[in-house]
Image 1: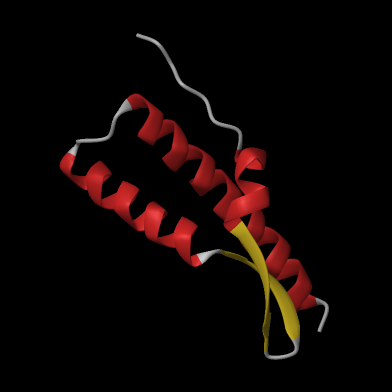
Image 2 (image 1 turned 135 degrees about the vertical axis):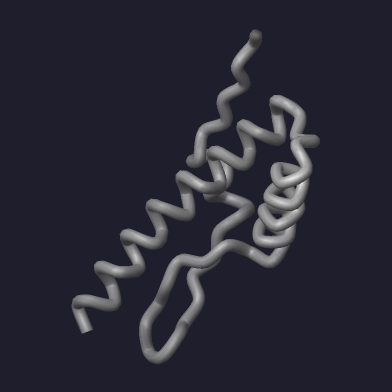
Length: 78
């Protein structure tokens, strides 16, 4: 079986925005990436992901973990 790997960094340029929330600047997914994530999650539920889509989902999940951590650090500094 061939394993496809997509780097989370490849999503930074087009899939990320910084949004001001309650005087904090937080990392967020763009609407396009958020919709794509939701589509991938739905396909994952039905078991219909391709290998490339599975790699995309893994990359987006990793990026989400990183941003959740960074955003929590930013909130804790307030």
